[in-house]
Amino acid sequence: MKHNPFHTAEEYIRLRTKCNSPSWVDTVMRVNEMFLAPIITCFLVLCGESDLFAVISSAMTIYTAWSEWTRYTQLAFEMQNMLLTTMLHGGPQIVTNDPDYMPYVYADAVFRLYARRLRSWELHRP
Image 1 (cartoon, rainbow, N blue to C red):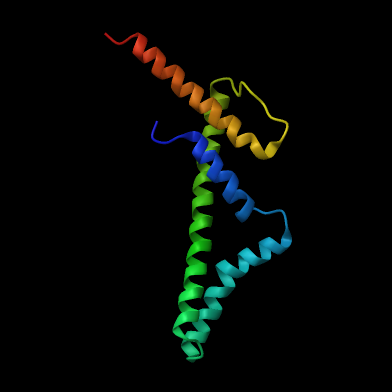
Image 2 (image 1 turned 30 degrees about the vertical axis):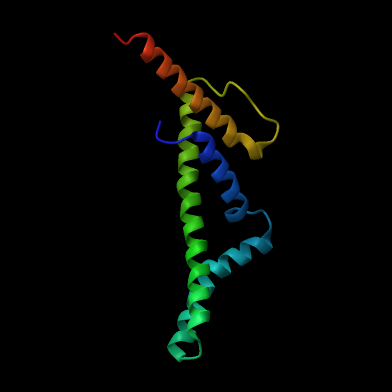
């Protein structure tokens, strides 16, 4: 196992609250950071109306927003892989009443599957 699935689930939940917020205000702010801010910054730089510190600050905000978004989409695919792996092996074995924490259920199922495979491999090792 390359990484701990619980860390993946934790990071996915943290980024999901930022990138996939149910609040329309947060969504508008995210669109502003990712799409409008680069356009406005480029326009101000081309017009010569922007100073170096404003450009650096804007660039860092844009970079952070896009890196969080790309990491969130990558983790969404990893969580989908965990879900499909869990369903393929007849799981999940545990449930939660809060759908926000289902990634932990999938992480638990994947971790148990890995532990079961490791244990059977050690038993059959010469």
